Image 1 (cartoon, helix red, strand yellow):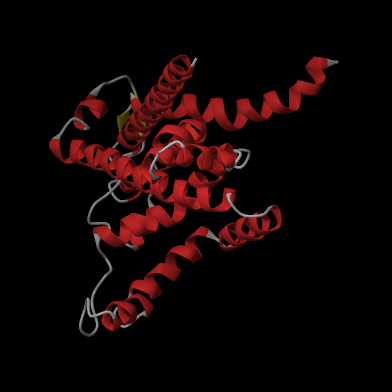
Image 2 (cartoon, rainbow, N blue to C red):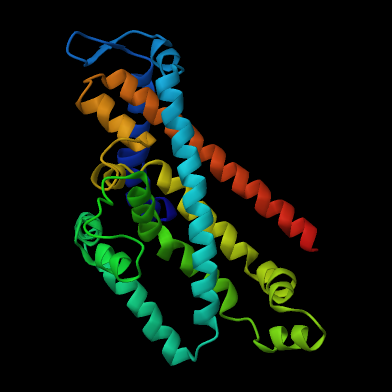
Length: 277
């Protein structure tokens, strides 16, 4: 009976996860024919080619951008989650709904919205003109800064919710007690609240860092494709270069980076649990 109940899930995982994964790994060791298709055989050339400086630069840039995006999302996510946790339950639900509602819109549509916001003469340009930061139409996109803004916007909710889940049950009197004992604002957060929010922050870092590595729409639309992430590299190898084996090799490398990141976050979480005992 148990086997029958688990069979649909097992077939789904096998057909949609394991089989495609095995095919990608196998193709990463294959040779390409004259048209970039899979010719077969077994070779390490695809992985050796990825060691060239131009490809290593993409992987390094992806790791750096993912780390920077994670730090920004953790900082902003903690600030928003702390504010939410201090509101009344009814106000919390309203604010959470306001955070979620924009993300009911398609991801591509929201990215195009940032193009309008950052375009010369757009709302952001108007604001910077009003405060004297710029004078007249300014070209904000495409740029690396616009790409970073898009990444933070896309992944900030995934950072807010785990941190909020860790802080929502915290008694606000803990902070007041710490202040009564002489702790300043910084020490209240560093010594009292941040240790409580640590599990949520680790989960938020994991949910932000790993997906950022595979993003390809935002760097193209907001960054103009000047600085590619690994996701952009994979799409380019499959579509423009028409080199399926090498694209598969880049996909495997991305998968290895994601698994290594999960292991690193898991080890960090275990270390923090032991340290807190």
